[in-house]
Image 1: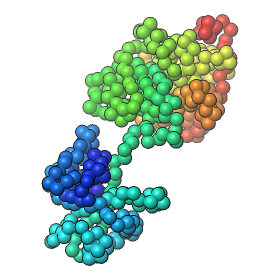
Image 2 (image 1 turned 90 degrees about the horizontal axis):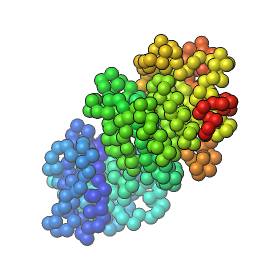
Image 3 (image 1 turned 180 degrees about the horizontal axis):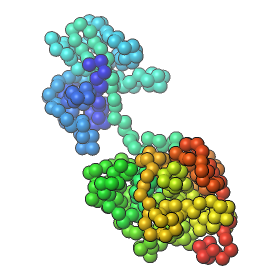
Image 4 (image 1 turned 60 degrees about the horizontal axis):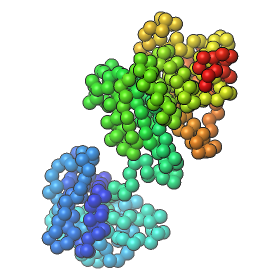
Amino acid sequence: MSHATFLIPRDALSRIAGAEASGGELRFRHVTADDFYVVTRVEVASGLRLPVDIPKSYQRLAWGDDDLIGQWLRTPERGVNHNHWYLLRRPGASMPYDAFRELVPGARDPGANVGFLITHEPDLPEEHVEAGIPEFAAWFLTRDEVRPAHVAIEPSTLGIQQLDGAWPIQSLASHSALIVGCGSIGSAAANALAAYGVGHLNLVDPDRLLWDNLIRHTLGPEHVGRHKVDGLKTQLGQRWPATTVTPHPLDVVDDAHRIRPMIKDIDIVVCAADGIAPRRVVSHLSRRARKTAILACVLDHGRIGEIIRLRPSPRFGCLLCLRANLAQQGAMDAEADQELDYGTGQVHQPMTATPPDLHLVGTLAAKTAVATLLETHHGDDTQRFPGEHAILGLHPTGDLAAPFDMRQAGDIRWSTLPSPRPHCPTCSAA
């Protein structure tokens, strides 16, 4: 009982706060496996007991029977909930029942049982609220003692809006992103973009979620057989409902003619697709549409990660310009590294990186995209990145040529991009 928690849904709060009566009966549901109590019915006037609307998404709050009867009281005297705050911070502390009855004379006699009481203390002084004294407090009553109980209040604002004022959610809500490749890295990027507050996501991937994907994908087994983009639409809609998600089960190479107009209508592209061809297509289409593209992948069998920010600027070249420059320096062919039988361009390699490393790369890709939007469109200098090309040490061996010669896990090395090559077919006409 000492660790039990009372959960008060938003609808119960409004019914108690808006009741003309100063007290009444409460119904509770006790979920014994997790030892919490949920308010399910509130008496707002004599004999008028109204059910509490609990959203179906809170599935666990619907477990068990609501057969426990308690009481709520609007306390006329200040100090009741201050006592709750004081006692709760002292493990095992309680108040004698008689002393509590003097403080709260309307509390019902629990008899030989345990009573449940919620006290409502509206109009708390601002300094009390800042100190953490609650407007609603919960108590266990016996004839010997009264103990405070933990209380969890459903806030009036949920989701990304809770960060309003601390994060530019209104700015990001106006932006859209196209995510090409919704596998392990892309699904993590999609979740992160929605969590950052990007208003609209277009998801492009022709593949279905299959059993071998489960080890590394953000989707669970309930989505096996579905297109990844459709599963992500469901997942993101439940987790981040403020973000609109549009699925496109398309192949960026075969359906490039359908992807091209999409890129014109969005603000930024994130590509986490496997293989050489999809990345080259994204690089080319984005440059021609004068949109920034963020490319994310893992290399060397998942030992290192790579993020490339391709901005449509005469200062920076495209993906092929970068690879040509690195080849001149003796670096590995990072595009061919993603495919079996290096350089054949036939079949992409099986994924060998650990799921958290893949998700780390996807999250950093999303951060790069969001930082680019905020810096470019809103002049936010706090989101300026140190470069355009990042190499991440995941579990590196240190035996590769620069810039892939990472030696420490967790290290991130940023560098710039080379200028466009003369007569580059992607950059020259952009």
